Length: 281
Image (tube, rainbow, N blue to C red):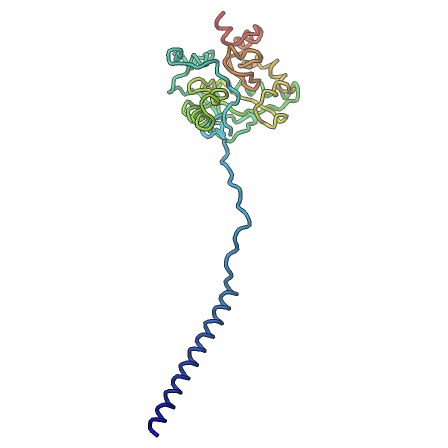
């Protein structure tokens, strides 16, 4: 009798354990279903958002990082030829209004005009503060030019890129060489020290008809034609005229205005010569 009682107790214990295991399994199953419903797995994205390249606006200019560098820099500069250190002359009087700057006559790397002013009274295109500067005498003349264009012909002109520092030109030129190779970069970017923008006497201008960009078709617009025929009255010349690429070393840039003062600008304009040709007379 005692043995039968023990067997019965063992069976009860086994049954209880089995029931407990069954209940525990059911509980785990229910909890798993509930958690799955409450926390579904994250969906895989249907596609990747395209990566946007940073804007190439000139920072430190314009025409720069004019960016710049809004932009940044004046497109279309074309080398006259491969320059070597023996060909280069560092100008001794970089602050002169009539200073000649090109692939032979270079500005010192330390030169910064001492009378730069902000363009506060003319419409500008780029947000970079460096390119929105000119030497004070050139800026006063630019304001007169813009006012005359508006008053005489109802044309609205815009300043896009003015002063650019030597270091800005270093960054611009280096980035173009890295991205496009030196041969290609030399077709549209001036080397450091060879850009007239460093003088503070230059402004690249544009208009709404050009979508505020720089392109040689500016010379075909009514605004561009007016500027070409009247800029000298205010002391400016179109520095890189059409058909003179072999002389200036740069392609035709109807947007690139260089300040020389009214007397000299008028003489250069009436001569039909480039600045290089005029000085060689």
